[in-house]
Image (cartoon, rainbow, N blue to C red; front, top):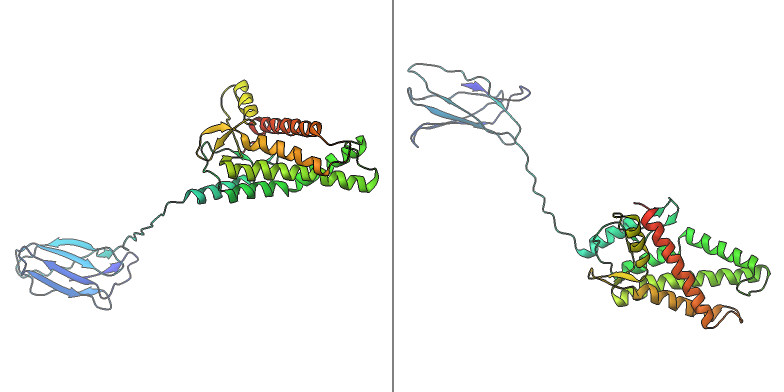
Length: 290
């Protein structure tokens, strides 16, 4: 006989007690009452019995007993432990698009010096390729970022003071400069950062090197203007950025005033854009960090 309790010494009613002897027929059972008590009669003397006590939600308790003729045995220390709960979780692998989306969401939080949008820098050595949708999202978010708008306004103000291009003086001229500068920025981002990369299957991001000597990193940063990584992970000529700079410079002929048009304007704006991109790559490699 004995009393079954849990680890807090509370009785466990309804627990099943099984005594098994060496032979299949030598099997006796009992059930604990409301107080956790049980007793088993007609136990044969001289036979080694294996005792197993179980209850739903508890781990099985086991012991052994071998009674002499006429012996009454009170079993003690029968405490059932809570059963271990095993949880099986099936993890489905993420798709490449899901991984790329998560990486872009992280990149959209990146800011150089806590201020400059640094959405186009990949610190992952081998990030997932971007879908066209993600390329357009990066370009649009960069185009409407407050820092971008502020920079466009400052350039318009500087142009107003120097009189270049030849827009009229006053608020009307400033508004035209502001619109032209923003058109340059917007078309450059959308064509070079989204449209051409989608059509040519190129990645518009800058891939951080972070190791090696200073000259190695400088060359890596500058070469990123003319060398890009394709969506297949292979390095190739950066047709997207070069084409975006040329296309944006060519479109400026549409809205620049008379006297500031022509092939000269295209190459001047192309050179300015290329120089800005090289400077930005240097900042991304040496100044901006995750």
